Image (cartoon, rainbow, N blue to C red; front, top):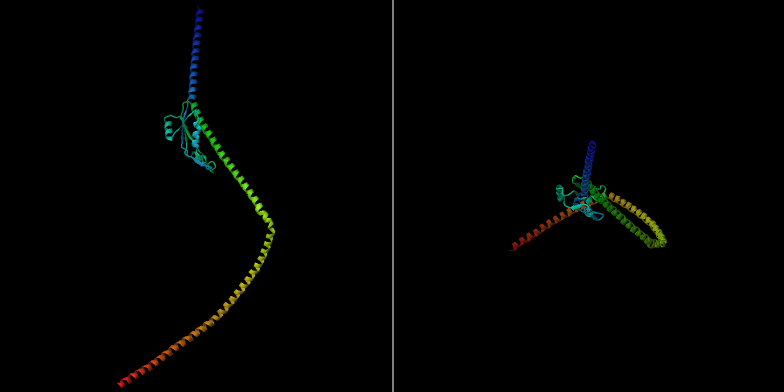
Length: 300
């Protein structure tokens, strides 16, 4: 009887163990199913990223660039994320309402700052972004990696653009240098044909011209010497005449002063004689008039 009881107890014990194992396997199955379902939801979920593009075009090497617009074109073909180009106000409001998972801000001077690569002090361009806090670290890390990857690809495109521009400048400079070399060759050819050849045939004529010029130079030097001698002799004669005239000036002055005094005396005497003669004549005329007047009265 004890043996039968032991068998029943063992059988019951194994049933309990088997039931526990089945229950445990079922729980593990449910857990695995839920975990896979959650991962699938995380993979299938399509995050929404708001893109605020405030960039304005800027010029570089006589060409306009708008990298903000290029950035929008770069992400527009991404089907794994829902990119929405909106204004700053709409983006901030959607972020506050948790309607978007992330916001990327492209500043107004984005293109301008990038195109200062050749300046002495280039300006570092910045793109700001912010992410919503997610309870799933996996989702947040994936979204952060995605934004970082997009920015990296965009930086590579900018570097390619810059080096393409530099290569274009080098090619243009090379073409200009080739044109300069060609023009220089043409100039040398023209000089050789039009100047050097005729110049060789006229070398003797130039020699005779130089000889004649040297002769004229000698004659000119002799003429200048004679002119200098004449000038010196003339100046010496004028100096001598000036000194002689100066020494005679005092005597001439005295002579003219004496002649003036004599003229004044003669004028005075002449005037006095005329005055005296006039007075005598007047007396005679008055006397004759008086005599005639008296005789006329006597006859009457």
